[in-house]
Length: 110
Length: 147
Length: 352
Image (cartoon, rainbow over all chains, first blue to last red; front, side):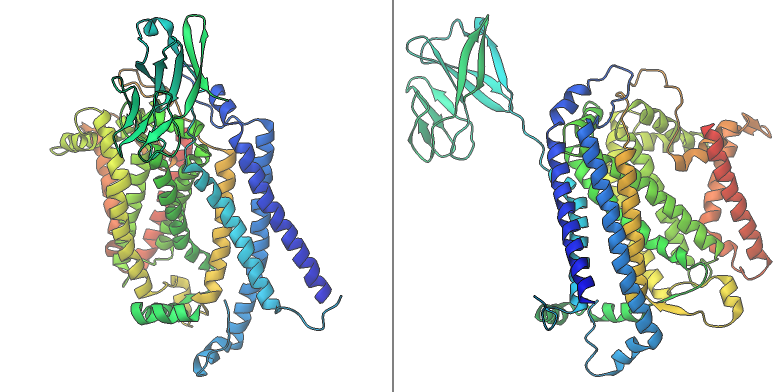
């Protein structure tokens, strides 16, 4: 069991770090092409102002960021599922009602 | 090195995992908003003033021009040349004025004084007025950021 | 941490709230998913408030600057296009879930006694949400929004006696002008938020007071439905739903961000292809198709009157259908399905 925990920890920290790094990267890319975006959006009358013309690098960064968002949502959903299963188990065993009756409640952390 | 017992419980570990992932996701959602609330203040790369406007400028007199959102001051020197400053006091950002008879720049907010070269000589200002580089191109005076 | 909790408890005495939340239960049956709709609406409302405030940092609600300031937000402000895109899409998401919420309540007959007041405040909240959408649509002040506002504010004119006056109140005069923009802006950022907060407060209080309603079929079974504790079982599930909704919102906001048209010109002819936001499409199409004269009366007047009758029926539904267990309830169910089919059909037709 311990080996699995370490692998999970390593994976978690690696993914977290990459998430933060990609966020920083995407932010930096966003800053740079503001100038090019501005000059490129001179509108001809009657046309719609195109929004967020994005050079390829910025598009990549945005897609990477979206990928990370969904990945972290998936991870969080998985962890949440653990908690929901546990809560359901406790409920089915009647432990939450038992906790009320004891003078000092069970050390639950939520 | 294998530890004889775990440093923290499985529960505490998972808790911190949830907490930090949630924080990271939150940061991803919040950081664009944090970046958004400070608009980029861009200074102009350069400003040009037509030479015709400056023909009648006597030595030791000042003409104002717009430097982005700040006032710029173009002063004719003794020899007939020009120096340019950003007319903002280095103390707390009030706009300064040029008093021709005293040949000094004066900031009315806290009575700060600068000499005719922008050096801070009296009052609270901690630094001289910011200089801008001046050059002539064709029929206009070009004022740029220095350095 | 516990010291802090004890300090707060001594002064705020919120233990009553946490006790209530611990006891609160959510019934489990095949329609339990509907219970997620309410909090999802709250999620999107929160997002609207945050992004709305941020947009208002740079938006200028005057005739001369409105369109330009929106262009500025989208091109110059860091990630301004994203903030605007989220605001626009979150509005769509919110109204969509409001409609799902409404239909869910209507079909499960959750409006019956003692929840009539909850229903009434809910319909008022629907009205406020649609008003938010309508007033917000004008703010970018481009050709499309000007045209849509002209059409929308023209509707009350058909009413006798008060019609012209109502239109003038909405438009701040005879025509849509800069004054209309100011009026719509202050409604969108001040009047409507206050109204929605007040209605929402009452609505939420009533929901907590009466608890979750159980659909008719479950009640007929006679047995008490199995229930989940709200905390932590249901709340954690809800958190999962929120995560997925947030993911969908940010994805669609990034890949499908709205543009902005050229600045509205008060003198120019109407552009082709005007249409309102999707939630008004069925009304738009109905008005287009209504014959000019019906039984000797002005066609538009009849259409507006029918719409008003529909809205009144919606508002007073719990008093109309006060016996949902019986045949009356079944009739209302059929009518609800018919109304839904009509709205969807008309909306699709208007897009063809």
